[in-house]
Length: 290
Image (cartoon, rainbow, N blue to C red; front, top):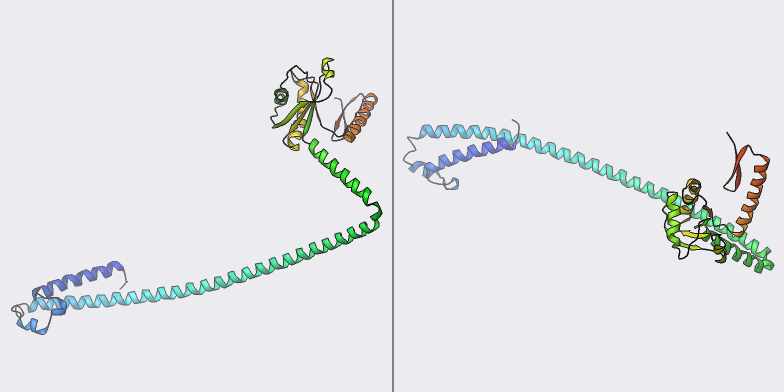
């Protein structure tokens, strides 16, 4: 017989009904029933057939209950075996996990030791090299310091200028809102960068002679400057800013180099009129006219 909770509940209910019917006739509970109760009951002899039926039912229930309990014992044993098997698997998995963690930790320790040894070796080499250089050039220390200061200053200036754009050819008016003028020019090339600072530079007298002063614009980053300069050529077809052009804020050395590059390009234009010539990334580029 298969064990199930429903079957067990059905047997329990049948036994309860039989118990209430049987002990109800003796007006007592199970623990109060004795032989004396059976002998003194007036219906004992006349109820022999009923008692026989009760006994048959009770025997049948006992048989079914035994089968259900045996099935339940088998289920419990099966569950216990499954639990034992699961516990064995869990212990094995825990062992594998611990071993894996130990292997990972060992690998990390090895990597860290190798990295530390590499860094230590590099530091020792650099210290030795620096010591040799310092020993060889001790007499030129003041000159080296001056060069270092000059290099640092140059780097700072270059970094500062990398965020600047110069605007040439834009007419100048009295009480001008320079930031609004710059925003209008940049909008013409579909650029809307954050403007940190905008101002005219150069001698103010030149404006009265009809030559507008350049506008120096500081943006939030060198990337923003690169984006603006990439699209600057669109001003050539602008209805309102056709005579305006943009340029990076170059250092003195860069301006001299660029001037020489322009002169070289003009010579090439005279020598080769069948090509277009232009400057890109410090080089003169030439393309044959179609």
